[in-house]
Structures are given as C-alpha cells and as structure tokens.
Image 1 (cartoon, rainbow, N blue to C red):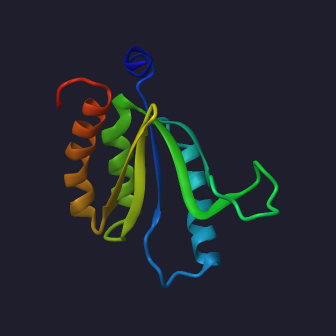
Image 2 (image 1 turned 120 degrees about the vertical axis):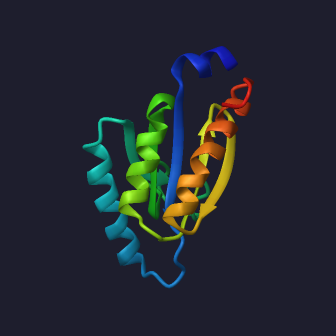
Length: 136
C-alpha cells in the first residue's frame, strides 16, 4: 500500500475558513471563489466541494456537501506552491482542515499567514511519516 501512495504522491487537503461568525452565504461565496481559482491552478490535480460523510437523515446520498469547505488534491511536488497560494488568498484568516494521504488523515488549524508558512514543513514531515519514509 505504501508503494501505491508513493507512486501517486497525491495529497488531499480539505479546508475552510474557521470563523464562527460567518453566515452560510459568506461561506458559500468563499467556497465558490476558491473553487474557481483552484481549478485554474496548474498545481491542483482536482478540486471540489467537500462531501458530508455524515449527512442528515433524509438527505440524498452523493449530494450532501459541507458549506464553505473545499477539497483539493495536490501532487506532493506542488505542496509548497499550493500552500503559498492559500497564504496569498487567505492572509491572516483562520483556516481549519485536514491532510489525507491514503487512509491516514491529520487535522490542522492555522490562524495567520505566518502559521501557514510554518505549517508547510510540518505538513511535509507528516506526509513523509504517513508514507512510511523518514522526515523531509
């Protein structure tokens, strides 16, 4: 399994703004803007709204998404550019999300552009550990 992960080297980032006072309409606007921008970014393999893995009873399966949350698949080689893009677009805003490599997932939270820049090395180390390799 580790060989398949290393061969693909696709990292899944799921993230959104962590601002409780935001209205759902503002979250939706954020997600639409990010989707549009990320779809035009060469470093991103695939991007979409994040699916709700625990939808409410009565919801149609496959149609439940989380408001304001985006999932982007990024190749390992493009992580630096991707996180730089996020830092430029989300300057000093609280971001909450997760990184997923294969079946392993780690949550993160950053509160500023500086913390996002510092998070990059942590993310690279986490990814290397999840792949079963040594830290980067």
